[in-house]
Image 1 (cartoon, rainbow, N blue to C red):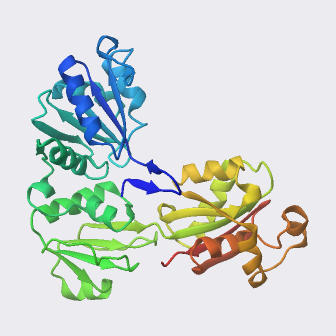
Image 2: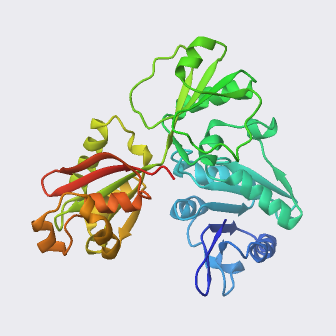
Length: 364
């Protein structure tokens, strides 16, 4: 879904930039924006083609692309492909973070998925534009052309992150080649809505894998950071299922909270890429260190109302000091417990020099 319905309005959650350098391009840009009324679209062009609804490109196109590339999920460029390639090249970082880039001709006949077809969503965006403008989507990613599935697409579908992109590339090449691949779903990720290619077979555990010896590659869902010695290429998909309850003294530096989280998860051999959320109380909602840690781990900040904490705090060790400060007898454990959907505790409250942490597994 691309919209979130509130009490009285619809919030558009996917941001698109439509960029063009010509009058004909502006005609198509306006038409495209009209057909994407369920997205938040901003049109950019040169001053001489602009109107009251467009934004101005005041620099050269390469500098301009650098200024917006981190601000949009999708950037649709209505211009020559060569111009776009040269303009974005200095600003690209990694397939896990680059936005989806589309290119269209000014007649609106073709829409090319140029960059970040899978993780950046460019392939789906190209199909969407093609459908709404009656254009032809041009998609060249190998797994899409052959009607199969890349590792990064599988990870996206089951809400996982990729532990190592080089390993993912190696296993995707095997999938594309039609080689037999084992999928070991150790974390019980939901596969019900996923149609796997015929050459990917689910296997119960690594013991089965070692006995069968018929696979050329392995995909496994796991939070475990311990290395698994396998004689064939393998890749780990890390589910975002970890919730950390966090409490801290006022103005605790973000780097200290980040380090405490890293050390806590390392002690459990748990991958930090599996962090889904950091949970705390309303009093700490604007705590800079917690906000910094959420940004660092790409985690949601979840605020648990005091009433919810009070309902469950009797389950956990009480602290008179915490009560004097917050009006609650505990913070870390009740917040983690509630935010994880009353999940499984993996690490009880740890006191780390003004920081309290607990680790929970969201099994919902």
